[in-house]
Length: 338
Image 1 (cartoon, rainbow, N blue to C red):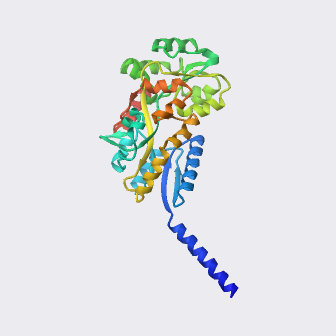
Image 2: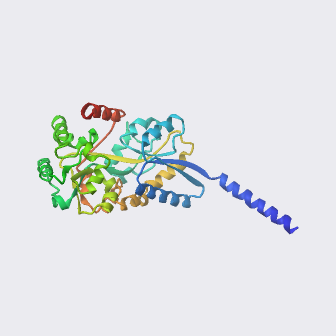
Image 3: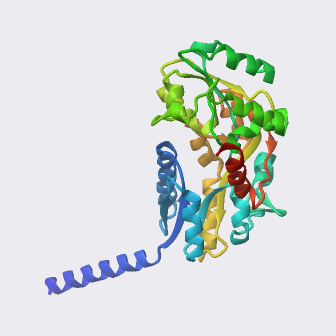
C-alpha cells in the first residue's frame, strides 16, 4: 500500500513539474557585446527570470557580423522577440519593428536618444545609451589638454607629438571615422585633412599590422585615439599610463542604441515587459557603473565621473540615419579609401 502511495506521489510531482514547465513562456533576445557587456546582460537576464519565473530568456549573443545575422533571421521568419539595435540600422528594419511610443515616459530620456531611435514619427527602440566620438589621450606624452581647444590646437598637437616613438593620432580608412573632421571643417577640407594624416601623423594599415589601433594606443605608440565610451572599460583597465579624455575640437554626431521588439513576435506582452526592465533606471545604472555607456536616461548622466563624455554629447548633433546610410558609407569608403 505504501509503495503504491509513493508511486502516486512521484507521478503527481512529475506531472505538476511538467505542467509548470509547459506554462513557461520563452522569448528570444539578441545582442552584440564585449565580455563586459555580455556579463551585465547575463546578470540582468538572471535577475529578470528570478522575478518572472514564468518567463525564460533565450539570449542570442552575436559578437561579430551582428546585422548580417539579424538580416538572415528576419529573412527566415526567425527574428528574435527583442533585438538590441542602433540608429544606423534601425531605419532598415523599422517596418519590421513594433512602434514603442507609448511604453515609456520619453521625458525621462535624453531628447537626442529619442530622436536618433525614431523613424518617420515613431520610436522603434527604447534608448539604452548615447555615444559619440571623442579623444582618449596619453597624458604621459601630451600632458593635460584643455577642454576648450580648437581644431587648430589639435593640428599643432598632432604635429608636435608625432616623432620616431609615437604617432600623433589614430586613423582608419573609413568615412565613419572621418565624419567629425568633415562636420567641423567642411566636406572637402575635412576629408583632405583627414586623409593627409595617414602615414605622416597617423599609422597606416601596414604600420598597424597584426595589432589593432586600440592596442597601439595601450602600448603608448599613439598620442590621441579617436573612440567612444564603449572602449573605456578596456582602456581604463589595461593602460599603464595616465589617460586623459577630451572632446573632439569641433562637431560630432550623437548616435544611440536600444531595445526593439519584432513586429512578428508571438510574445508581444512578454517582450514589452522585458524591454521595460532592460530600459529601467536600475538596469541602465548597471551599464553606466561599468563605464561602458553614457546613459540615455537624463538623471543618470550625473553618474559619469569623466565630464568630457557628457560634454561630448552636449556638443554633438543628432544623427538621423536613413535607410541608405550604410550603402552610402560603403560607397564613400570605396570612393575615397580603396
